[in-house]
Image (cartoon, rainbow, N blue to C red):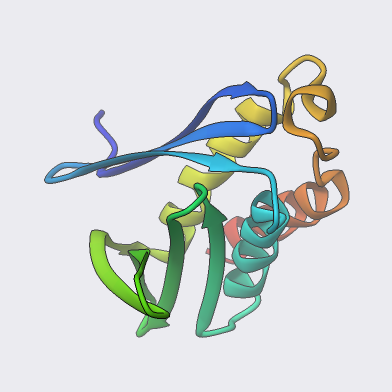
Length: 153
């Protein structure tokens, strides 16, 4: 069975990680830095908030100098993810470009990110390569919420 949406985090080295997202129609790949934002922690916080019924969440990724934002919006049991590329232009201007968009059920999208995070969590010497510790507490909370969500379904 092919999944409609897949996420992968790979090539973790020297404070950088490759973020890859695939859907049936599109693909996005970019390298992200561990600074200044704690993107993995923000991602876990966003997924937790969405499972708790929050309607919107934002996750920031920095590629130095370009930034990406994951904009999650929940409406009528559907979750939309818009990935916006923010490019700084001369004279303090910024250009925003929608580079990836996917719609799914909330639990399906959360599970796609959870699978990628689980794979990343098993990475040997994670903190050494990423420059930050893996957000274990948030990961355990997300797993607990996923089990509760599945129990209600």
